[in-house]
Length: 135
Image (cartoon, rainbow, N blue to C red; front, side):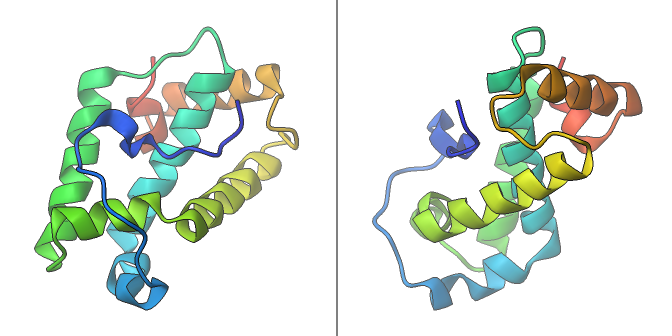
């Protein structure tokens, strides 16, 4: 499956409608949130593409809750955070960034199982934020 879905489908946040992009400026420009959502996007792709790597459910849930709490600390409601994460343009932006990340590591096809597994194993071995969400 492609990188087209962010992990927020875990049900940690409630559903909300799409919102105007300018409402998301503070979320979009927040480094912690940006990096965290990119980590989730990359980790989710590795998990879905590589059959020998899976998500550490507790670690991923805790990480996601921390990001949601941080976004709400910026003054956004749970519904607004959900709208941001589910926004088609924002999802496409993170997918594009994740594809660039994979391309820098020699993985240029979303369906490249061996490439996703190699990157996942490398991240796990390095103990990176991505690797800490996987096993």
